[in-house]
Length: 198
Image (cartoon, rainbow, N blue to C red; front, side, top):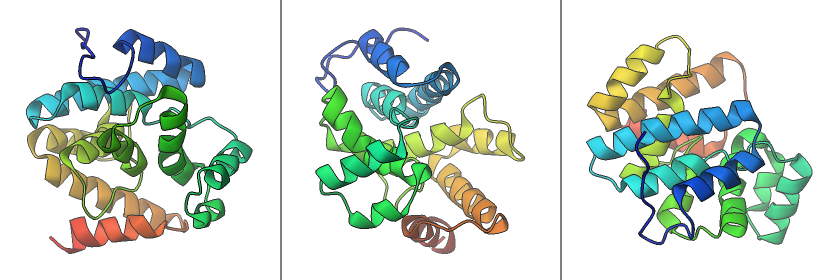
């Protein structure tokens, strides 16, 4: 991928600086996933007339806190006065919702649209900006993903972003239901808005 110039002030350093910071925070396996998500996000941004710089930053940071301990997440929830209900959940929810706070604190990224895209990348939201949709979908369709219907999801992503969000939301909820998982309330709201409402 050609080097993306960070010039709009969303992050103080270059893309290489951000890559280095993210790499320090993650295992090699997780870091490689993040780089693939960035590649998908940049492609989706170009197709959907969204800032490539914002897409790159949000993608590189979406799993920045994924490998932090439960103790650290709980401490951040309390220190930052986040919704106390978050204490009842786990990493799948924390690494997005609480992870955005950690990105803000450690990387000094303050752009609310970028932070919201990090918050929403796992369970979506009833209303999502194009950037939210791009990070949500890029995480789902990056080239390392190998699940039934992955190719369908990829084809949809690069043809119709909204259709891809709907497909992913339905696919994810069906998976959670079939494995008897507890479903985060926002995931149900996302389903109602994007799948049931269509």
